[in-house]
Length: 638
Image (cartoon, rainbow, N blue to C red):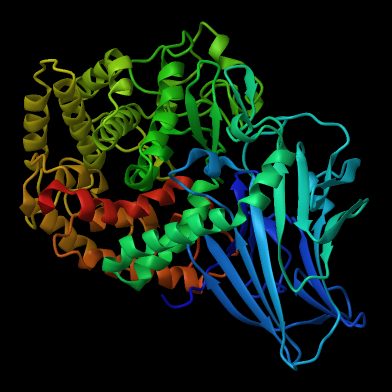
C-alpha cells in the first residue's frame, strides 16, 4: 500500500482522554495534540558527540536544528517515521497494542515509541535520544500544581507526573482533557526524570523502546459507582502493567503486526483507497472506547461521542460502528448494549422505546441527550429518579429501537451467544411492538442524522423500523418463540416499495417527488438475504448514488452537500458490482489528502469542499468495515 496523507496522524492512542495525534505531515512541523486540538506536547531530540543537537518531534526550540523527515508510513496499528541527514538515520515507530480480539491487551494503557539510530559515516560517535512529555498532559485548560517522582522497576527506569490534588472523573463532555490520573514515561537502559516542566527519558543506546503509560485510576462512573479500567484485574497496578509491557513487547508487537496484515489482507479486494481509509480509522475507533467490569461481573465497552455532545455509550454510535466488532470480536457488542438494557429498566425511563445514551463521557448515570437539565447534567444521578425528564421531541424512538434490535440480533448471529436475547426478550419485544405501532408513515422525529433536523415520513428511517421488526422475528425464532413479526415486516416493506419513483428509487420522504437519500439501513436486508426488498431497488438506488457523487463523496440526501463517510460505505454495499466501494473510497481519500483541517478522520464532511462539520475521532468509523463483512459473510454471496 502506498503512503497515505492524513489530516492528522495517530501517535499515542489509549482511550478518549489519551489519544494523541500529530496534526502535521512532519513530526516537527507542529506540537502534538489530543484529538480535539488541545496541545499535549511531546518533544524529541538527539544529541551527537555531545555538541550537535537535532529536533525530530515537536516544534523545535528557537535556533534548534532539525533532522529532516524523509519518510512517513502509516498502517492500522503503527505510525513510522524516518529522519535522515548526512550523519544519522533515525527510525521511529509509534504503536499501541490495540488488539481487538484480546480484551486485556485492548485495555492496556500503554503506548510504545520504538527507535533505531544508524550512523551513516562509519564513525563511532556518542549518542543520546531524549523524549520529553510536557506537563500539559496533566491539565485540561487550567494549570494545576503537579506532583511526580522517579522509580526503578528492575531494569526499567521510569518517571511519572500528575495533578497534586486528584479528583477523578470530574469533567465530562466534548473538547475537554482529563486532569486526573498519572502520566508515565519508562525505558530500559535509560534515565527518567520529573521536574516542574514535565517528565523525560534519556537513553544512550542507539536502539530501544520508550513506554508511555496513562493510569487514570478511575475510568468510568456507571450508575453511581466509579470503576477502574479492565486491565487492572489482570495486571494489578500501573507499575506491573508497565513491566508486563516491557517484558512482553516482542509478543505485543507481533500481535500488532499480525493484526496489521489481517486488516490489510481483508480489505485488499476493495483497492488501495479502501485500505487507506481503514488505516486512517482503526486506532481512532478503538481509542474511542473504554473497557471495564461492573459489580455483577458484566464487561462493559463504552464509547465517547467525540465533538457531538460527548455522550457515553450512544446507541446510534454503537450501531454504525458495529461491523468492525462483528468481524473481529462480537463480544464487545454485548459490552455496548448491556448498559442500555439496564438503564431502560430504571424508573426514570418511562418510554416504550430505547434510550439514546446513558450519560456524558465518562459519567454514565443516565441519558444526557434531551435531558431538561442537560447543561448541569454530568454529576446528576438520573438513574435514581422516579420521574422522566426527557422531552419526547428530543428523542429518536424508531432510530434507537431499530438500532438495539439490530445490535442484539447481530451479536447473537455472529457470536452464537444467546444470553443477551434471552435476558432481554421482554424489552426487545416492547421495542419491536413500538416499531409495529409506528408503521411506515412515520411522524416528525429525529434519526441518527439529527444534525439535519427532524423529518416526517422518512423512508430510510422507516426501513430501519422494518428491519428492526425482522430482527425481532429472527430473535424469536432463535428462542423458539412464535410471532407474526416476519409477516408484518414483509407487509411494511411492500408498503414502502409502493412509494417508488419512476426511476425505481425510493424518495427521501413517502410521497415526495424529485427527492432522494442514501438508504443505508437497507444493507442488512441484502447481506442477510431477508429479501424484504427487491434486488431491483438495490440497483436503482446504487445508480442514483453514483449520479450524485461529488468531489469528496455522496451526500446523505438531496437537501445539502453534506455526507457521512460511514453511511457512504454502507450504501456502497447495495451495489452488486462492488465498484461503488472503490469509487466512494477514492473520493474519501481525496478528502483526507486535501483537507486543511488538522483533526482525526471526520465522518461528517462536505462533498464539494474539503471541510468537516464538527465531528472528529468518532467511533462510527468502525462502520467502514461493512464491505468486508458483507463480502465475507453476506448470505447473498452464497
